Structures are given as structure tokens and as C-alpha cells.
Amino acid sequence: MLRYAIHRLLLMIPTLIGVAIVVFFMLRVVPGDVVEVKLRGDGGNVSEETLKLERQRLGLDKPLIAQFGDWMIGLATLDLGKSMWTDRPVIEEIGIRLELSLQVAVMATIIAVLIAIPMGTLAALLRDSWIDYVVRLVTIGGLAVPSFWLGMLLMLSLLTLFNWLPPITFTPLYVDPVANLTQLIWPALAVGYRYSAVVARMVRSSLLEVLNEDYIRTARAKGVFENIVVSRHALRNALLPAITVIGLEFAFLIGGLVVTEQVFNLNGIGKLFVQSVSRNDFTLIQGMVMMIALFYMLVNLTVDMLYAAFDPRIRYR
Image (cartoon, rainbow, N blue to C red; front, side, top):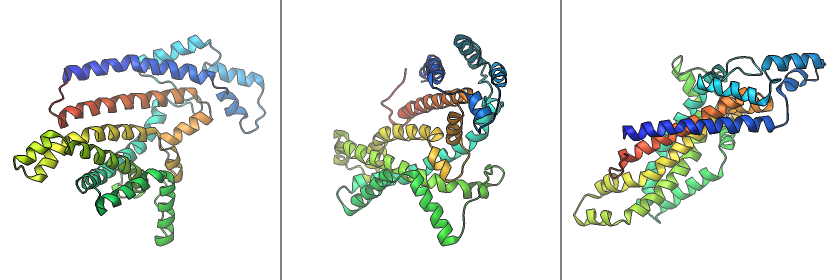
């Protein structure tokens, strides 16, 4: 398995190079100029000479191939450059917001797993019962209700019923756990509800399919206790598709909570993405795309490794 993991990690290098090439040239095709937005965006009367000097400072006057060469050299040395808007290192801009987005994603994943696996298992074991119908109704509601709208309802309910709103300023978990959880538990619940609906439906359908397999009937015919049949034989195999969904949804949450972060006034990666696009901050956009691409690949590798842990029949060589 170690050899397989090393092989997959090495394959990430050409994939990241491909992502870097695509994102670099696609951004240069998009109309707009960060210098124009920065110096003339609010109606500022800035001379063409000043714009030219700013473009020279940012390296935008260089040929496209030269800019691409600088970008690839920076990637090779783990230097993502500086933001064209704030003139701060891209790694620093991403780092101060990644903690918040990562914590929300982890909390939403934990909430989703704790809710989805019991719900999906009960719905499959009690198929076509009233419990199954309730679970289906809850999961359909989770798929139909947008996370940001549920977040708005949570905020309005807290304000109306308790005259209370979560703190606005982000406090790291290691500084004040109570203040941190008070602020982030609500967006995690809003996102985790939809997350759990997707996973619960996947667990239910997978478990129903596994329960009809021959080895399940054989275990029952041998007199194995039902809870052992479900937990050791059926559920472990049924969780494989659910693990894939959990991994992909978790990776999506890192940069995909744009509207939810706006509702809860969270300064995370999603909000930073919107700001960088509106400002045509090429270097910051490129850095975030590379980060999310790397995150997706690492999550996929982790999911593949978990397959072998849940299903002994899977062996990676």
C-alpha cells in the first residue's frame, strides 16, 4: 500500500502542472485589468503613466511566456507570489482564512456523518416503514433547501426567539473554544444538514443492495446475530460509496461556501475567492485554484486508502 500511495503522490505532480497551465492562460483570456480596477475602480483620476508604472511593478508588462515562466518557477519553489491587490504573499492571504473554512468543513462533516449513517441504516433496515418515509422526507428536504437559506432561518430564529446573534469576529479554537464554537456551529449545522441528506441517501441505497447479497443470506442462515450481520458484513461494504461522497463533499466545502460565508459574515476561502475574482487578482486566484486542486487530490487519495481499511478484499499493490 505504501508503494501505491507514493505512486499516487508522484502522479499529482503532472496533474498540478496541468492545472497550473490551464488556470494561468484562462485567466489571461478573461477581460479586465487589476490595475484599472485598483486605481480607477472608484472613479479615480489616474494618469496613463501611473497605470503603466503599476503594471511594470506587477510584471504585467512582460510577455505572456515570461509571466508564465515566473509563475512556474514560483510553483517549483513553493512561492505563489504576491497578491496584486494587497501586495501581501498569496500563502499568507490564504493561510489566515483557511483555518476558518477548514474548521467549518470538518465540523459539518462530523455532524453529517453522525446524522447520516444512523439515518441511512435505519431507513434501509426498516424499508417502507414509517421510519423509512420520515428519513426520506428529511433527506429530500436537505437536498431541496439551500444551505444559505437555512442559515438565514437559523439567524432569524436566534434573533427573534432569543434576541441573540453569534459573534461576528472570528476567534480561533485554541484562543477561546466557547466563542469559536458559538460562531461556527451554526454555519456547520446549516451545511451539515444538506451534507447529511446526501450521505444518508447513499448509505440507504448501498445498504439495501448489500443486504440482498448471497454472503448476507449465508451469514443469516448460519445463525449469526443480526446486529453482527449488519455492522460487520453489510454496513462495512455499504459504506464504500458513502466514503466517496463524504470525501468529495468535504473537499468541496473548502472553497464552495461562498454564499453561506456571506450569510454568516465569515471571512473564509469562499469569500476570498469572490473578492479576488472581482478584483482580477490573478496571482491570488491562481494560488487558490492550486490549493483546492491539491486538496481534492489528497482527499481522493485518503478515500482510496480508506477503501482498504473498510473492505479487506481491496489490496493496493
